[in-house]
Amino acid sequence: MPTLKINGRKVAVGDDAYLLEACRAAGVEVPTLCNFDGLEPWGGCRLCVVDMSLAKWDDDWFKMVTACNHPVEEGMTVITDSERVLATRRVVLDLLLARCPETPLIQQLAREYGIEETSYQPNPEPTDCILCGLCTRVCDHIGVSAIASTNRGWGREIAPPFNEPPPDCIGCLACAEICPTDHIKFTTSNVQRTIWGKEFEMLRDPTTGEAVITKAQAEHFAARSGVPMSYFETSDKTKRLEMAKTFEKLQVVK
Amino acid sequence: MMKMIYKVSVERCIACGKCELACAFAHGSEGRPSKTRINIHRRGPELGTPVVCFQCDDAACVTVCPTQALVRNEDTGAIDMIRSRCISCRMCVAACPFGNMLWDEVYNCVQKCDLCGGEPRCVPFCPTGAIAWVPAAEAALPPEPLDRESLEVTP
Image (spheres, rainbow over the protein chains, first blue to last red):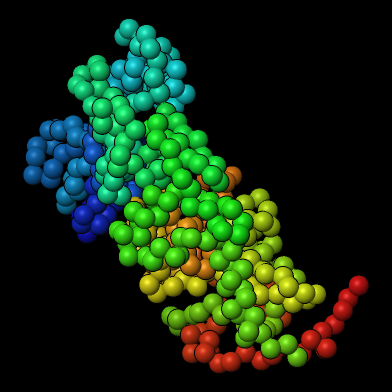
C-alpha cells in the first residue's frame, strides 16, 4: 500500500488508486466536474489539477497533473492548494463561465474561486453543456454508444449521429441522470419516454400499468447480463406481492 | 466473527408495521413509512408477510448494474449500494425478481436493505421475533409457530 503526503498529511491508499482518491482519503477536497466513481477517470475538465512530486525528484521540483487519472506511487508528495494550482483552476472556471454564463453549478464553483463574472467574452448563446463527457462515457460504458462528441473547437457539442434520433439509443436516461447541469432534456411517463428526439415504448406492468424502463432497455440489458427477460416484465410492487403469496403457503397460523 | 444471518419467520408476523417505521427512520427518509426497505404485505387482521431483500448469492441487481454500484459487503453479507457510483438508471429496480429494489423519487436513487451495516435496526423493534439477526447455524432451525391466542392485547 503506497503512502503519500498530501498537503503535509500522510495517507495510505490501495495500489491501483488515483491521486483524487488519495486526496479524498486524506480529507482534502479537490474540485472536479468530469469525474464519476462508477466510470473510468478521463481528465477532461482539468479542474482537479494538483502539484505532485515523486520521492526521487528534487524537493522543490513539482509537476502539475490531473488528480483524477494520475496513479499513486510510494513516497509521492502532493500539494492541492499552491498558488499556481489555484491560478490554473481559476482560468478553467473563467473559461467555463464564459461558455456557460447562466449555469448555477458553474457560477457557484467560480464564485468559490473568487470569480463573479468571466473576464472573457460571454457566450452569446448560453448553454448548460460543459462538455464534461460524462454522458457519452456512461453511454459507452453500458455498451450503447448512442451519442458522441461532434465537431471541433468552438462548435464542439454532444449529439447523436447527424443530429437525428439515435438508432442505438435504448432510452435508459443514464446520460440525463448523470449530467451535472441537467442539460439533457427528456420526458417520461408510464406510457412513453422521449430523449434525443427519439420516442420509446415503456415496458408496462400488465396489472398496474406502471413502468420504470423502456422495452429497448430491458432487451439490451437482458442480452448483456443474461438476466431473463421475464424478470423485467412486472413492476416491483407486483413482484413483492407475488413473493408474499409464495410465502403465505409457509405461513401456518395456529 | 460469527457469521450472522437475517432471518424472517413469516408465520410469526402480526403486521404491526414497527419494522417498516424503524427502517424508514433509520435510513433518513424522513420517517416516511412508504419509503421503508422492508414491506409487509398485509392480508388480514394481525396477519402479514414481511418482504425484504434476500441479499441473493447470484443477484440479478448486481448483474444488471452498469456501473458496479451494487457490491457485496463481505463483513455483513449484504449487497450494498454505493451512492457515488449509482447513475440512477433503475435497471436494478426492474431486474430484481422479488421487487426489493425500491425507487426513492425524493433522493432520486435506489433504496435497498443494507442490513444497517451489520446491525439491522428493524430487528429490536419486532415484538414477535418474526425478523431476527441470528448466527448462521441457528438460522436453519425451523421457527416456532406464534401462539397468537396468548398475545397480550393492550388498549
